Length: 557
Image (cartoon, rainbow, N blue to C red; front, top):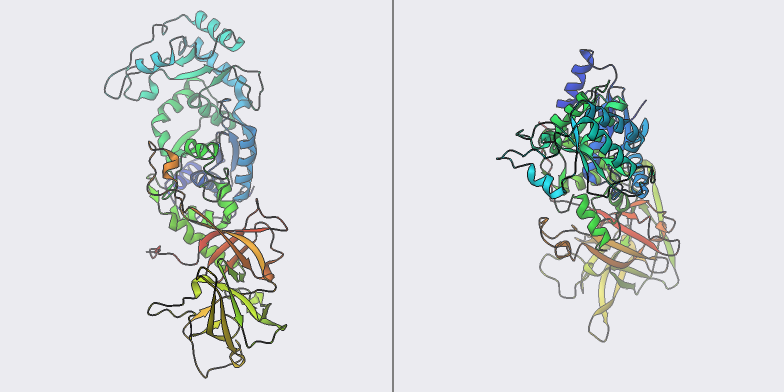
């Protein structure tokens, strides 16, 4: 089954090399991977890397990938997140072979826990959470055995059954593995396998009041599903010995193997799901899909394309080392993608009225403009032009600095795809602010006419005032000011300039733009029609990326 939008079977990295070896040596017959998010929040760009790797590698080798929800903590999980995650994976361009839930396997997990108890490898501990934590020791000191570690098999079976029956309150009993309290790996110091939680589960309702811990459940899920290559980020490396212990001691017929790769962190934002949820819960952003958020839904709403994100992930590659990646690299891939697909149009973000005093009153002519110069096959469009226009406030200065080539009193500029105009007069309001510039035009200088008698150094864009459509235009900068500090208050780290709203005008050629449509506003940037706030009567545009960047792409060696 085809799973990936692009075929990269010839690509090489350490995981693909392992897969090739496993297939050639007949250690596996079919590659099976899984993407296993916990449904306790929306996915962020770091998850996109895991999605692309898991689906991409399986797809490259003709294998299968399951979308599996590790829903073992009912206190934090919700069906809203389940739905959002499915939408994100599908939007990125991937289709799962099986939709699974950890909770589908709760009965088998329970039976495997009974097996561990019967083998003398698990016991019920009724110490408090603090006592369990303190007895584990540190990296430099060994742990201490629980006073309940040597309970008989019969007593442990009885207590565990009573835990399941709901006889005990939350936090009073846990089931722990019996491994090695002196292990240098803290994960092997009798880790907790089950805890009590009298909570309603999004998938199983009130059927269960004990829930498996992730470190116990995850390897069992992989084994049950026949996963061959369990691909995860580097922070799970220390848990690999426990992963292998669970699979072996629970006597699973299928034996998956875990491999770790470096996680993705982006500059200028926060990539912790816990902190992202806090941003949402405290109203510091406009939901999980706020265009400033590093969530996949945030990037989608802002206007990034799945092709750009996949291209970005592909360039990063699959490496053991992680590290922080410059956000500008992601913008670079978005810019390259949008440059080919986005039609050009004019939009004025901060309007200033321009009146052409010698242009016939009541006249409107249609001028030709190129839809996308990168794609000449798309041809041209007709744009209305009349006596009154809107230009950008920044394109006029009453007293300009040196080398300012835009409009100022006495200067001539070209109106893009139109005529040369010369500023003759300015009109100010009672506060002394310029509210209108009055110009004359030269009818001989129409674009495409071949006029060469003189040249101008400046070209500015415009929209026709009579037909322009009012629009809300949102400009974005990084969400955080400075590097994220997990210890500092979140609200104090929000960049006050991360969202700027302009009430401007767009050309009438964009009047039928639908939510999700993308355009290049000439001289401004690439913009997306906001799918959440746009209505037929009120169009909202989000800045995706600027036209230019200071980011330099290193040449391929």
